Image 1 (cartoon, rainbow, N blue to C red):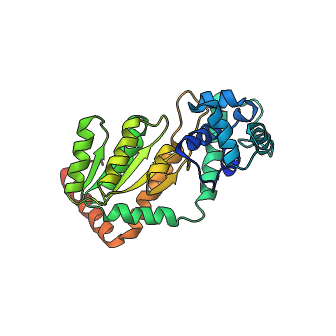
Image 2 (cartoon, rainbow, N blue to C red):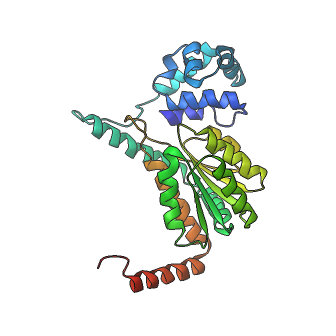
Image 3 (cartoon, helix red, strand yellow):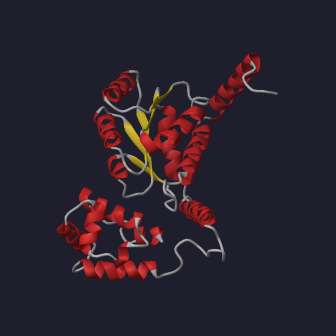
Length: 277
């Protein structure tokens, strides 16, 4: 369902405020086609006239016409695939997550964007990886494995003035690119860090949940991976999968160097008996 709603906005030139509205509609795809302009404005944190201007920007005479189109998009088919009779809430959440991964796989038929992003990150020395709040575990997971194939990975998982200091240090050390993992609810510090990195001359690759997220708008390269919203807290299966695909593409970008580094790690792990037999 969210993909159908997102399809209504793809290719449109939207202002930052309009992107917030589009993102709210995508995040609440099941409900928004039946809400008033005032209710959509409240969801997006904007004014009601902004919702009207958003509808006009998409070629509609007003919000009611956009709502009709949203209803048609939602009514085009089942939102999350067929539900099994008698499924528990946990089963429905996991089935929906599986459907999300299938749709993500369809979107990755052309993996040139991931390959290009991987080349940028692989070439950066050092490689800063940003992940604040909810995005922290995904960034940490990526950073853990990236350190096995990259000589200098710097995890940026703390906000405050120290974050800016560490960005400056990475740039001074020669960094040319940064991976920013930014997931809902988008921390203001993470968005400010992307702005700081861009101003310092870094190329920013954003792993985020939607093409209309505020991080995608700020980044040079956006890798959208939807999150699951069926539970109290989001499921990050999609972003985690794309992070691993990005790592695979980094390996493919320099296979000989990667193989050498992996063999060195295995030698060290064996000598130190890091892992149990």
